[in-house]
Length: 492
Image (tube, rainbow, N blue to C red; front, side, top):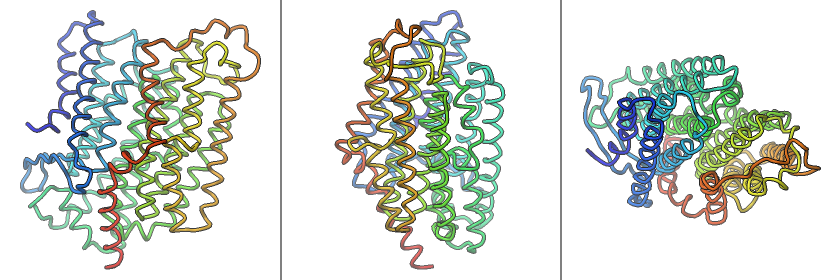
């Protein structure tokens, strides 16, 4: 068994181990879950250390044929696109478990679901076979349905049902697109994913466009992009804060990751749809920012800001050039850190005050200085302040968009201004003014809470001040992707 299989199946083994432990032994259940997640994170770091950043091809490949007639296989591998997502997924799972200490009911079931969710997420980023990819994509729905529906807020059942129905509806379009490609004669010398990439080159243009539209709907629901975002605010508000960390930090990136793979497979169709994709991305950025500005619920504000930030990812992809794709990949990582940090901090604040209404707070800096420091830093990173990783990501996306569309990118600048407005509004309402009497005795962040908050904030600053390692991690793969796209477009 290769290292990727060990990485992939460890959370599933951990979940099986938890299933055999009596539900009364809460400490043992939590310990096993934390140790499993920590081991997977350390394993991903070891994988990162052995990753050849100058190699644009797949690494640590594992390939075992499953269905020779169909050409499907148990095919795993990592490249510059999946490697940062892999490390981010394992990091945020460990942080989500640290943020789950307040879960007191059905602790065993909760931790089993979290580990199964990690298993599905890792499978999506490791799979190099479209059939395997689709299976893992669907696997994530089951634990998320229970995590939101069982441990969520007052409207948790509606939120979990909306999430599943939206995602399953999108998955149908994704499946139709996969079947449309697979009906051609596939070469079974490699994985189904590589075979489909080859077959897509010979498809009629109109069929390529229809297939890409199917992928756009399927992956766009999960990203999300307007108007496929209807499930997002309710799911984020009602989900436990620890699950919101995974939902916004990783699950949204699964959609962006899948769409980027589809665009690379169908660049001619992406070029035909380039303007609609760009306008959709810019509208999502503006629409998400304006809705975030209007929210009084802190979790709803972060949820709508995710719609705006994922619009940056879509814009970078639509540019179809190296700078834009680099910006999209960087923004996926940056938003993962920003959203996870915000949901972590909002959740910790809610546990102390039992309210998420931003109007209920003022001058928390006097009673919670450590909380104020981390929250302010994260909000500044969310608005793209220079010196944070958000600035680096948005700058690359802006450069890529300007190279392709020129003056239209003024709308990008307007989105940045709106983002700055809701971030500064939130900072002002939380940390300025007189201290309200009911907020005088709030406990600041504890040492165990400082660990995850410090890790996320450290990532925001370190990769903002010295972004070269993060950029270099994906640069070879992105350069190869850009070369493939431009070559296909020239041959058109």
